[in-house]
Amino acid sequence: MPGHGQGHLPRAGQAVYAISVAAELAGVGVQTLRLYEQHGLITPVRSSGGTRRYSGDDLARLARITALTGQGINLAGIARILDLEDANAALRASNAALAAEQAHRPQSGPPHS
Image 1 (cartoon, rainbow, N blue to C red):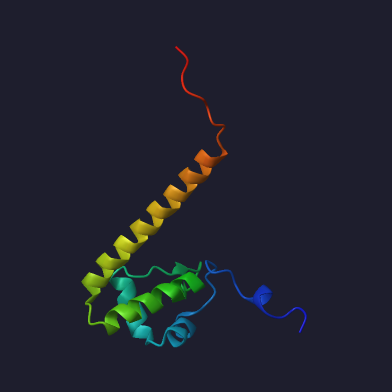
Image 2 (cartoon, rainbow, N blue to C red; image 1 turned 30 degrees about the horizontal axis):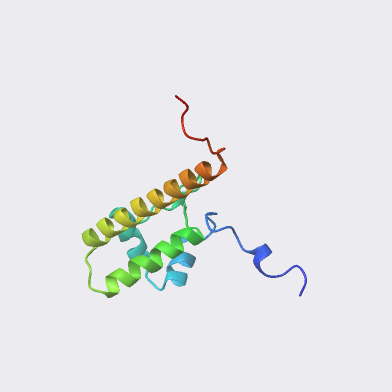
């Protein structure tokens, strides 16, 4: 149907899901989401009234956390893994930006003496 589909879904980073909806979509309990937040594994946006709002990116992170807990990794270990994955993603993005910048620079010849 025209007008339906991806155009009506929130952007991945747009925090729109209430905690109960996020918990249901992630397949975990509301208290589990609060526990993950206490351990710094996830940081939902807060509305002006203090209500937690989760984004698609948060749901993807929750899926990763759920996969790691399913492998028997404790929350401290998960926190370290997520920190390393986040740092790796930031380095990859930085490397890609530098490569793109270098590709757009005019090539200079060898220095003249």
